[in-house]
Length: 351
Image 1 (spheres, rainbow, N blue to C red):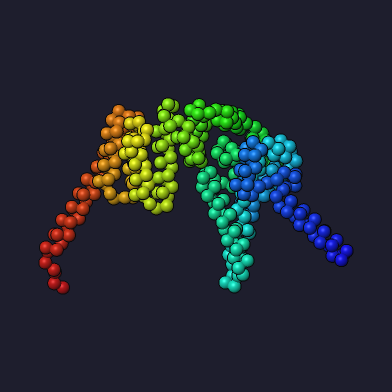
Image 2: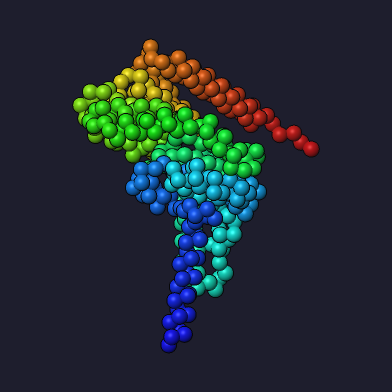
């Protein structure tokens, strides 16, 4: 019995060490592998997230970058202690476990489904952060809102080379931190204004990540004292319409974006209404739609909404271009029809 208990004890210790090593690197700093877990920890600690996208077994650089830079004691002391570390890795070896034989057990299928689900969640983040290369480094707020990104460079052969580049970004990170602190300290409409300042400081590609705060602005200033409600009603509809369009529902996307301009209960000004109609026409055109009547109708509504607006010239140019395109297509169809009529009227030649 004593031997069995002792063996059980050591197996338990071994399992604990194995689990610890799974979540930690050689310098003892924990690297999370799940966004939600990292975000929860970041919110609790008040730290931002150091987010790494990697492809350890296929991109030829991630593994070396980790070993030479991110898993060093210097990184742990200078950067690791200031951030929650998150690594979303896309190793092929792990994903290969989702490909099962026909005789796979239920347990194997469940494990494969779990891996596939994790990959889908990570792939969604790849799209949201517009990842263009691996490895890729991002600094985000605890909620995952974009602060900055640091492009990987082959010169990152040790921590010092990376740290020099990282320091070049510190000013932008500090500015974002000041903006987020202003949001935390403010209340009511002042908080709405602080949120808007952070939104404006966020590059356009990453503003969709801020959708959760759009609704907060709408709730903080229901009387529209800041004049921001129309801006965020439109922004929310715009992002929703793009998501719907990406799912293949073009008509639904157009309805979402144009309905905010049609709704008198909302707070869009004339220029914002113009942008809503213009965006609807753009989505239709981009989809390859031949519903030119609807495209022209939306462009006309866009122009009429604000004839002297900042986008009026672009709207008018798009309208003229579309009208000319329709005219050319009609002329081509007419010539083709005439050609077919002439062909049908000619007698067949005898061989």
